[in-house]
Image (cartoon, rainbow, N blue to C red; front, side, top):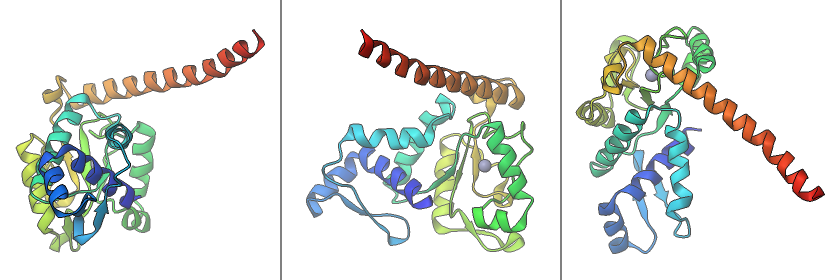
Length: 222
Ligand SMILES: [Zn+2]
């Protein structure tokens, strides 16, 4: 899972960075770069821009448009300094927040999924599409937790783009935008708006999916 996320972020960054594109041409014909911890990320030459874009869009889907714009700018900046972060969580429905909240209260589940803490369902800015979590920001146990080398750089870049590192080392993975930056008066208002938006989208998708087969059947019988 993490690998896929890392790849899509890197792929997006590779796409978005003209600096990288020039470098890749000089070094080899295949766009290759060293990702996090020396992992080699190869971007297949045959893959077109149109094919790659949906992957990163999917990762950022559900986030508030303002968060998406700022995230893309932050990811570009990280690429410039050679950091390729893995996004572990972005928008969450309230049902997903329930699941994470339950997991956060069970030691084994928490460790397995790399969850530091989770707010009660209905109160997390992930549910407002205003928060993002990254992997490998910090290491060490609770009281001895420290930022990793990349973690320090990520915190700096995210803060530069207006994200708050709200809980510091208590929940180092977590970055969020203030609801007022997206035009909301309160966290609650931002969460409610996002959940309604997502429910409407889900309904529209379901309707479209049920209409399509009917239309096909009608066309066949006509
Ligand atoms: Zn978070």
